[in-house]
Image 1 (cartoon, protein in one colour):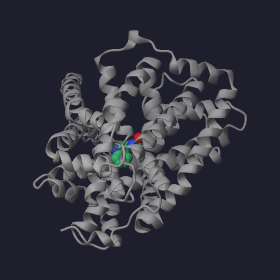
Image 2 (image 1 turned 90 degrees about the vertical axis):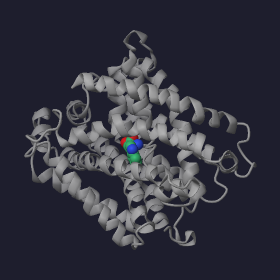
Image 3 (image 1 turned 90 degrees about the horizontal axis):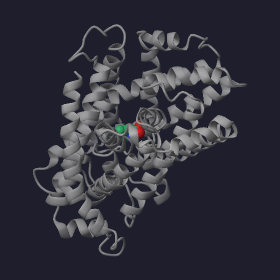
Image 4 (image 1 turned 180 degrees about the vertical axis):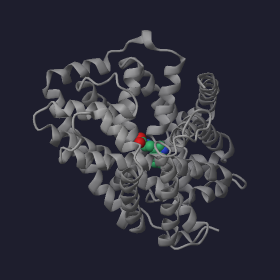
Length: 445
Ligand code: TRP
């Protein structure tokens, strides 16, 4: 049973609530995933479609998740069942998914730490691909950095909502923005940077296919952290009187801005044809090494990635921790410890699956790739469909309206629009793309 809500923590300010939620959204998804997916799909055209997905699907789903959390003031499982009995499984599905994401996300987060240090101390050498492969397939070093990262998470989480998450966000986010601005000013100062800006915004519609829409939707969901209980739990910590839609719009704007700036920085380095992990960890260090004071720039870049990853992973951790605290009646310290140990175990398997245990595969994928693909292709869209159905069709209309408009005092004009998107547009569009995504994936096996 949920604990007395009076004992729950909460964010102290509305602005810091935005910072924390933006911290969840802004992560590895913005800084390395967005730029390479954009370039794979022809720059501007992809961004155009992506913005459509953000506005029509991502934003309403974020509003929905904040609303469910804020309305029920509970952990993700109780939140759904409090609004409609028998729907707790939807919260549980989100928590399982976010735990699976933690498994591989923590591993990449650990790499950023190693790369920041190796850049500062100039120990990467000049075989960038070789360094990446030998580091990531090694047994102990990547585990060490991953554990350090998970322990940092743990320390923030046991500090509580205000003393841990909110306080960390107030430091991490301004630092992240500062580094991003420094890197962006530097790239725009180079002629390549201004060219990149043009490239990012020049649409090439000849490269648009069905897959473009699929990837744009997947990226929109991933980058906004929707469907997994993380935004729900943050919504549950919003103060009374917080404008749900307004907060969501701020979070989406910050997230989009960071993604576009990151794309400009990376395009200006001329590495857009590299994809996946290779982009951030192989191509970027190579570019930096050719610049004056390159090791400093490289260190800043990996610090940026690491800070973004940290502010995202604390929301993942918090979502699962809240379950142990509120549903299992544990102390915050004990609940957080269980999540920390669980994440360490899964991350260990994920990290080793790139090296020592790479022989073990399912459908041709190692565990690391399996966690990534399963959550991105199956769970994210599925949770998007179910959440929109829940809010659009299952939640009593009057109650949902009261929550979204703060008892009829705000957002009265936008409410019908949000409701329409959640009731019709999200379920229909996401289901269509989901089915195509699964077919596409099966064909690719
Ligand atoms: N939004 C994060 C990023 O862009 C990744 C993410 C996906 C996430 N799902 C999440 C973060 C759930 C926290 C909770 O990197």
